[in-house]
Length: 352
Image (cartoon, rainbow, N blue to C red):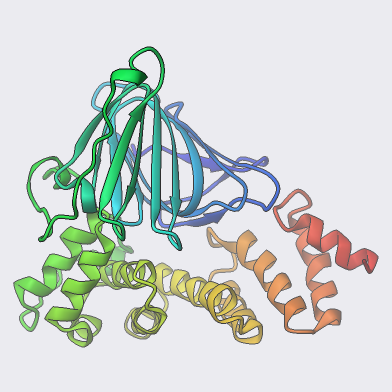
């Protein structure tokens, strides 16, 4: 059976595919049934891509995470952050990703990991006590050590590879699970109109090479993928566009997902993502509120219901509708008195 995941103070169970965001002033705890623990630093954001019997894939969109993976036979975990990926079996490390500054950092406290992606090529093996800092934009990575060996440990610098690496430890194994799709879209998809180059973007995206995957998708025909790609691939396209800071293509992928797979869980996730895009990127709080309402209407008991209620309240307030925001605050506190938006809800009710 796949592992189970519980999040937050109330230890709410969430499925694969769920987005999450830590509160502004507190950590968000993630507890897996095998004993693995992840503490998301305040304001950190990400998504649980897959969960299976051997482990999970966590995509860190921004911020810092403290990871402690339980030691188990055949354990397989992955943490991706922008174009970088970390593969582990049992270890403890801190990982940080700043997409605006294109800065990746991993401090390995215990065990061994292999970090791949972008300037790291096929993968860089790390040992406990080392810290790696990397940037695709600057075309280099540095490795430093702490402790007695720090003085003799040289700084390692690498240039950006001229072509994407698709072999070696950076390539997912044949047994690596893909994100489960809804049952009614799980059948193999026939794509006679899509070239092999167009399908190659998925392999790059699953390695965390989002910039290269986005470039590959564009070169092969982004519009063709919007018409023929599966629901899972459309969500990957949106992720790649987001990391490339191309909100226009991100929006196109999300809208195509909603149009072609209307009524599915991923279509609901796309509505939430469109609301987040309108709020966080465009500052269009009225449009954001409508998308969050759409998600709640389509998935009233979905995995992002609490987050959608909180963000709907916040977007409504920022759109200038105080009366509706207060009404939403009362509804939020009724369902989630200890939720991440509870402080805002109480301040609205008290008139502060």
